Image (cartoon, rainbow, N blue to C red; front, side):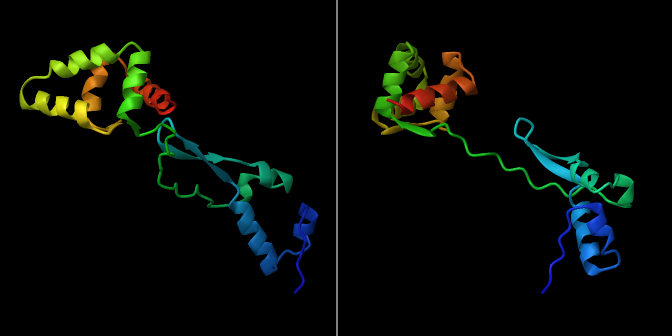
Length: 159
């Protein structure tokens, strides 16, 4: 099987009317957009890109009816932030950040059965999970945001 090498517009024009020409034009049509992922917004965007067709002397007008590709579903990239640390790591990190006494006071101030459950969890759990209800309830009491919580878990995991 002989393969046609297409490096220039002249190479392409030389095979006009052949299946290879049609296939190459379809490939060029597929280069009219590039997909860019925007992690901050949680979406993909189709961005017009004439780089490849410019190399062959085409314009977008040469590709009648070309439409942007369907955008893929956005998938959040995996986080490097640990989702759990040992209780030892959590307490040492809180101590190092001068927050341990605040956490102990906040847990001690939770009333009723909810408070008893929080104190049992704080005293006897093997690990502290970033997504636990107790952890999430302590975030405002400590005056930190999600980025601060991420930094805390990263620092704790290093201990």
